[in-house]
Amino acid sequence: MRHLFAIPRDLDHQQKKLLLLLGAAFFIAQYDMTLLTLALPDVQTSFAIEEEKLGRLIAFARLGAIPAIFLALLADRIGRRQLLIVSLLALSLFCLATGFAQSATQFILLQASARMFITLEEILAVTFALEMLPARLRGWGVGFLAAMGALGSGLASLLYGSVDYLPAGWRSLYVLGGLAILYIAWLRRDLPESPLFRQRLLEQRQAFWQPLHEIFSRHRTAVYALGIICTAFWFQISASLSFMSKYLQEVHQFSPGNVSLMFIVAGAVAIFGNVIAGRVSDAIGRRPTLACGILVNSVALVAFYNSSGILLPLTWIAALFSFFVVEVMVSTVTGELFSTSCRSTATSLRSILCLVMGAIGLVVEGNLYHQLGGHAAALSTMALSGLLGLPAIAFLLRETANTHLE
Image (cartoon, helix red, strand yellow):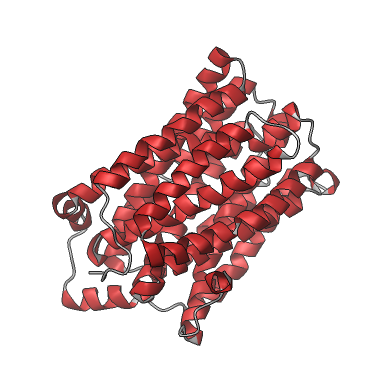
């Protein structure tokens, strides 16, 4: 078990440093996303948002990531490095501005803008890592990046525990995040360009829309497989995770401090799902690892929204652990299925699909809330949709573990 978590010895100092800098993208992304989930009751109170509109507002914020597809097209043409730095600076600006929002509209617009650059950061970081690492370590590398994201989620949970004592409440947490992003951008000033991209650029400079044409002409089966898996899983997962803090505080009377403690403890255990998923999939394959993650996630979410007492943290751990497994596997497989000339664009399309389905799921949850009489019943029903991705894994998805990247 010990070797699952150890950093591979054959990575040189430069590769380790690059992974840490890339992992910062996931750290910040999960900090921001977890903060929105945890502080949802506080934001609702600050702006007097009606209950049935919550899901739609969060959905709109997440749809802000859609423009990232056009920036990803640039990444496949001009390179990854410049956009990695620019996206951090823009993210810092919008994160800081969120702390000073004066209305629900301003808050959502700023968070939508921030989400665009968060999406771009994650896309480029995964692409860079896959192009930098040897085949037998690619799964571990993406798992490491996701583990860094889990640490960001843990920090948000830790800080949220003191939200009642901060001078500006939840606003202070966004300001702190924005300042931290500026420091990470400064550390990335010497980040080199991806080696595979440099090689491809020397061989051929492609037209702006060429990556999109290549994706749908050369990789059609991969598009179908990932489309079904992401549609089925992300339809429910955004809503399931977004309402966890609210469910604990309103149904089980958890205080913000108790919610924070549970997220920290559960997250500390679940964080290993990132690294374990990468290492195990390097050994036994991406497909079985992904299928197990989806199955466990559906069962755990249904149990979480229909349990109490000690089962709450246990099912939350299982749900978060399995979510990390699925996220790592989908990110890794997407990067491995497509060639260097369209890898960033393909990853961006996959991310946009996940976000769109997550937004649709949030809207559907709002409707089911009224029809079924509560969030728990609505979310329990939606959690089963993830299982619809299992046939695509079995019959359409190609195994990519230890394969050579084009």
